[in-house]
Length: 521
Image (tube, rainbow, N blue to C red; front, side):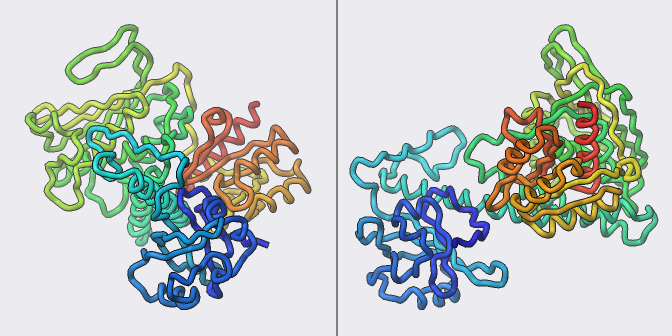
């Protein structure tokens, strides 16, 4: 029987398989089975299945040698389906899983495809693109090898992003949970807040890595939301003991229009804008005003700072009384890698990133800085004339007493979710696999008020679990979560989704939202 080791390379473009310390092939992906035949499906010994004498070393010796080597890529020959011996560029690395050592082989074929096999078309060269896979100067054989290398790199990045997000979910979740219970004057609060902030920055890196590893277009999970909630949380990041004193003024529209948005990304955009505002007022009697208000235009708006089609919008304005931006610099603030701060931590990506996030939401961002009057950043996002209520922001307002089934294959994430939900009054059942979740749900389906499941799990995926649970109970509410994949486009308006990593407030707020939606249906 095959072991399920959370392989993560099932759909890679190159052959990949796991070998244990005794030289037994324990798991192989689809390409490996196609290349070497069904022998890869029966847990064979490496020496008896595909290893060849051309390698001049026994597989056991090679595994021992590869662990001591600092060069993971080497040239090896293997016996492919049909009996021919073929050289491969082989990437080999050791891994420890559940206390047992394994060796991951990824093989890139050196020879050209067989006659009659379809050739891989090189990607189109676009302006600004690097020449890594440029068609000019490369043979078709080289292009195939480069494509296989890129496929393997994408799958490795995907696996790393998944594991990284689970670890960050645990760090960020526990930090935010402790902060929610700490008195504002607690001596450890500032250090814990720094841990939370560092985890949020690391989450941005994990998201970028996940975005790189997606071969399809990255479709963000956008849901109807209230920008007031995001603005409040972004401001809270900078209202910590130990930071320079700043007078904050929040003027938030009570009847705010609804905006369809990716909550995580939009919150990061507001944090980037606030970082600039805080830096601008340090060393003076700093004041930062944050406003939200509705805007409706019957005709297109064109001015020096904004150009908007007719329609309804929500405007978020962040204004400071800082040093301002010189008029000759102002036109360049959205340029990537442009920065007036000559320090290593400022790479000139802050406002360029904000611009990209807002543009992906079909909105615009404008910056004005009259001499001697500080700076104002305005974000306009398309909205619907449908009022959404402010969601609760205090932990006390996010409590509940319903029964929640939490499903995730990562034990640390399960423990975190159980801690957060139980502390808020919920009765929590946990399952570390889709199969176990089905068993629990089938026993007493009427007792479970909400199912929270990760979308990416070995064996039975979250999507498959949701489909099978719908057969038992079509109406049970489901909250799906992941740090990598998102609900499909057609399900996005029906399926609630939470992006990993998440804070305590984000999890409890989303749970409250899903339960309220189910009660109203």
